[in-house]
Amino acid sequence: MADLEGLKVEKNYYLDKPFGVEGNFHVKGAANLDWGMKKRLANIFNPKSGNTVMFAFDHGYFMGSVSGLERLDILLPKLIDHVDVLMATRGALRTCVKPDFRKGIALRASSGSSMLNDDLSHEILAVDIEDAIRMDVDCIAVQTFIGADGQLESIDNLSKAVNLGSRYSIPVLGVVAVGKNMERTDQYFKLATRIIAELGANIVKTYYCDKFEEVAAACPVPIVVAGGKKLPEREALEMAYHSIQGGARGLDMGRNIFQSYHPAVMAGAIGKIVHKKFTDKEAWEYYSDKIK
Image 1 (tube, rainbow, N blue to C red):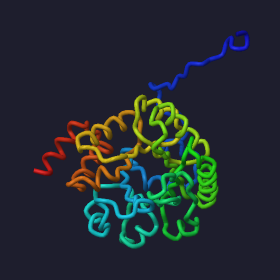
Image 2 (image 1 turned 180 degrees about the horizontal axis):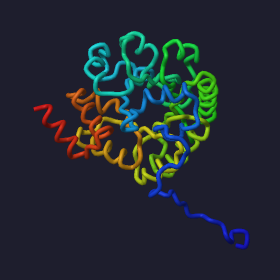
Image 3 (image 1 turned 90 degrees about the vertical axis):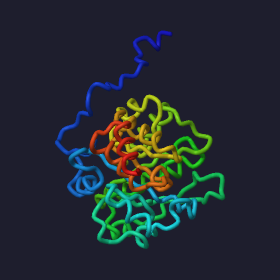
């Protein structure tokens, strides 16, 4: 057809070229942000490695008491030395994290139905920005359903969070939500991560997939990979390694840490991959030696 002549349809992600942006700040896409934003992002992403290990234990906001998270006051002290960021609800932070904790805090700001409801996509922005400021958090996390029934509400939540975060120099973490009927393909993740970043999120949390390096290259802000369901430890370390190799700037592990029989050792092994450039084999050897 004549109207298609000269139309470029193939995509080039320039995987051999690093992200090009002026400035020397170590967080992707943040070179032109103000000091307050950079200060908080530097609390999340290690300035030496440029990466982060997040520990997510916000599952209770829709799942209640989860196996492995029954006693946060007992679990958290074991893990704090091995992670860079805690991702949690304000209730969990205020009741179970000591105020002298000096690492990053990602505050879960969206909320919705419980697991008793099949449709979790209709969330609200549940935390006032004033409360995030009072808690001195380093970013606010908003669940974003792209392609689900609650897409418009999710985009509204994210946009409001970005507007408020920009006003007070608090970064926003956009969390790609994957419901039971949603695809976990590179095509979907390229769409969802790019939309979330272009709406203004400073960090995007998503899942590892085939062609992940293209997903990471096409996203103009750092991607942190979610651990997802509990995997055998060796498989979880393999996924962590391939994520970092594919361009992720961190791992946000929840169940693959707190549902491990050796959560602190598992968190340490993840940290070796994220910050010390361990291979999955080296991390598995580290884990195996520590649990002997």
